[in-house]
Amino acid sequence: QVQLVESGGGLVQAGGSLRLSCAASGRTFSRYVLGWFRQAPGKGRGFVAAISWGGGTTSYADSVKGRFTISRDNAKNTVYLQMNSLKPEDTAVYYCAAVQRMVVTTTEALYDYWGQGTQVTVSS
Image (cartoon, one colour):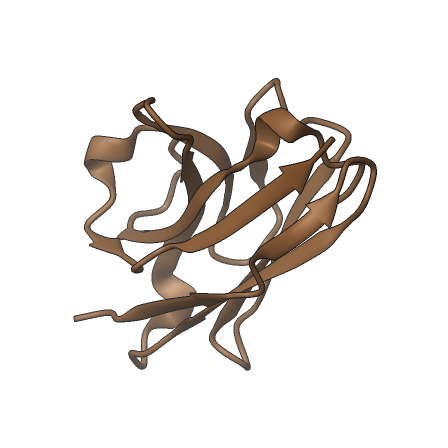
């Protein structure tokens, strides 16, 4: 069982930055692919970024490439999402997710564990 708790959301002006954190429980944190998803008001939840066990492989949605960076610290059981050059369209609830597998995946249905979400609001 893995429990995930996100933090770091908030209100920021367009062009600003935020760093989200997701703290995980469980002794085998390093065996999990970790991902970030987001759900904007009135829309479905969508993929943002994912990272492999050792952090050597990452994947990003086209809408965030070059602006967002996912990273992980297995010693701290934490995954991060650094968000730069934020836009109003990045406004959403951001969720951390985990799945025990070797290959990074962007498919929401494959993730087994989810956090409660953290709100990110970008003002214009």
